[in-house]
Image (cartoon, rainbow, N blue to C red; front, side):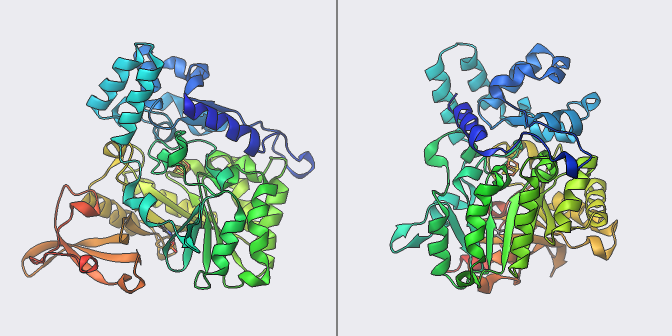
Length: 455
Ligand SMILES: *Cc1c(COP(=O)(O)O)cnc(C)c1O
Ligand code: SF4
């Protein structure tokens, strides 16, 4: 399939993977080895599953991105606890991730051995999965001198997102990823940058931007020298308005070797130091879903090394059915993060795309889990905001459920807004037990529109 080609090219060009600096570490050499949909049959642990289960997996992996590396398979998944194991759910496709009618559609064609029919069906099913939630494609791509700036999204005044073209894969893929459409091989769907020059031009023209968030995929699949080509220019005085550089990554979970044993690990840490030395803040926005990701010794060592550079690690991740819809899991995740010097930052609501029906949690339940988890930890661990929906108007936080003048309502606020004036204004929606996203909510008190919908 198309997607496999993309992944294969990506591997060659990007992943620095061979070898370790033995003088510097007690961790042995570790080679990055990844399995994609085509290689599902080569994962020995899957032999425990029935033939039907393996077939189901292949069917789902033909639609949603699948990519998992040996470290995740050997160190993070508890194979005595499948399919319930949270990291197994996080990385391996499950039949129920496709709605029954979509699953049947693909499964039927799958057995026919007709490649073009299969590709057509896959395309059709992907289209049915809302590949671009929150108007990502149409609304957030900026222009400069009347030309669109590729690889840049500018939604909130102070923060620019940058998608380097060579950072659009990850060391493994999450089954729930809202960026899944970028990975499945359709060039038109990929939001990617050709070069850092355009980013610099854009930032020069936008002195209001204080934060650049390098994201993906996972920008840390890039070799350090490539990442450096994007970051170093931003350290010059003409970009003094850029105060914080954030890197969004799940490498601390999926490939902590990136910071410890990869041949350019030391250089990566040096780059982090250089950003700090230039007077800017470097924040590693680490994606975590479960405290188990923090347990392997090499994952802990990676965190120590990043922190030693002066960079800060902030943690964020979505609340997901079948993975972490449990207050105890979140409390332990936040508490462990605090002990390791990681700052809890966001709890997200799973977005309305891909396999969302499998992972979604009603907003009221999300809030209950958040509240319950908060109550189990001290103030130091209560820095994660949420549950937060990254919707078209902005990041909307569910603050709670209450009753006003006899009407049961959700209390909401915007943490980030397309219009900065909207931020931190409380607003209210009618209580709805089933709602899982902002577009399911109606304004409370008989009003016709939410305040940000008024034109
Ligand atoms: C979350 C987010 C940001 C960063 O917002 P902060 O509140 O500064 O963390 C920027 N752009 C987009 C599109 C986002 O979703
Ligand atoms: S690490 Fe992030 S971008 Fe990569 S698959 Fe997971 S959620 Fe998506």
